[in-house]
Amino acid sequence: MAAQETIEATRAAPLWGELRYSAELIRLLADGGLRSPRRRGGAPAVLLIPGFMAGDSSLAVLRHWLGRRGHRVRMSGMLANVDCAGRIITRLEANLQGLAEESGGPVVLIGQSRGGALARALAARNPDRVAGLVMLGSPVRDSLAVAPRVLRTVRWVAFLGDLKVPGLFSTNCRDGACCEDFRQALTAPLPEGMSVVSIHSRSDAIVDWRACIEPHGEQIEIDSSHCGMSVHPDVYRALDRMLDEAAAPAAASA
Image (tube, rainbow, N blue to C red; front, side):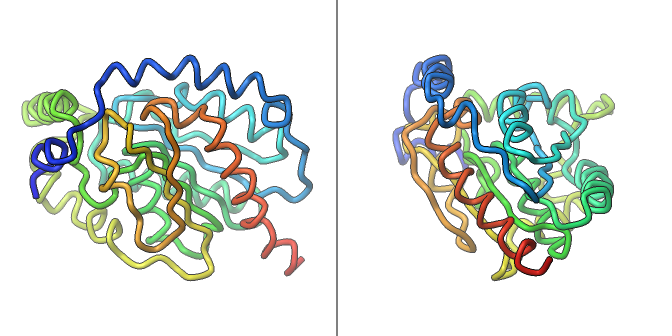
C-alpha cells in the first residue's frame, strides 16, 4: 500500500495537533518525579538518534534527563537527518562501537521517527552491542507512511539529492543498492533477549501509527503529538521501566 493511501485510509489527525508540543513539555517539567529521576548506578549507555529533518538538538530534553538518571549519553552527530540511510548507518555503527567500548557494555538505542527506523536497523546489525531499543513514532513498517505534506518534503529532499546536493538522500535510496542492507535490517528479526519498545500515537499527525507497530517487541500506545514524543510524560514513564529492564542483565552478570 502506498504511503499516501495509508494515511488517507486512516484519516490522519489534523496537523494542528502537533501544536501540543509545548503543553506536553510543560506537563513533563511539572512532574517532579519525572523531571528529577533517581540516579541509577550501572545505568547503560544510550545513543540518541533524531527524526527526519531534525538534529541532535531536538532531543536535548531527553539527553539531559538521561544524564540525570546516570546514563552516559552520546548523540548521533547529525545537524539534520536527511542523508542516505546507508551512509548514516555506517557512521552510527562507528558511534555505537565507540560508545560500547567506552562504557564497557551494550548500549540502549533511542530514536525518534526516522531515527527510530535507523536505530532498529542498527540493532539488527549489531545485536551484541545493543541492550535495548526504543522507537518513538517510527515508521518501521513503511518509511513513506507519512502525511501528504511530509511526503512532499521527502520528495523535495530526494529531488535535491538527485541533483547531487551533498548530504541528502536521493530517489535511488528507496530501492537502490546504497540502502539495501538498511532495508534488510529494518525487517530482520531482533534477538529475544533484547528489550524492544515501539511507541505510537493514533493522534500522530505526521506518521501513520500503523506503520509504527514493531512485531518483535512491546508496543505502547500513548496520546501524543509526533514531535512531542521526545518530551511526553508517558514516554518517560515507559523509558524509566525499560531502561531498568535493559540494565538488569548486565547487573546480574557483573
